[in-house]
Amino acid sequence: MTAFEITDPCQEPWERMKPRAEGRYCERCERTVIDLSRMTRREAERRVRAATEDRICVQLALDPLDRPVFRPEPKRAPHWAGGL
Image 1: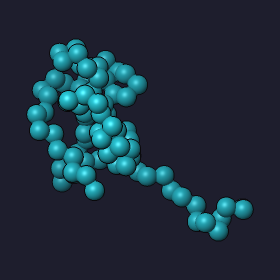
Image 2: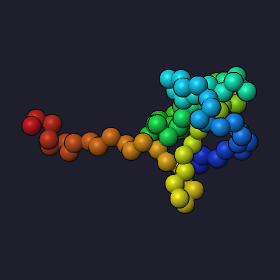
Image 3: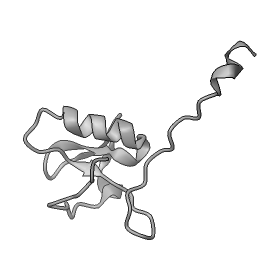
């Protein structure tokens, strides 16, 4: 399991950024901030690993215990339910 750590948090308010497909656009740093909370943990890990830039900007929601919040993984039907 990958640990998600924001080493240099941006002080730009998320609400002021312009919505984009993957998150929001930050005019201050001129890049799209990716909202990892809209992804499952697996999708977020894959997206971060696939980043080709030397730096990636992300939004990461935290629960009351400061743990990252992700979209739940989709439920899979039991293998025996495939023919129903």
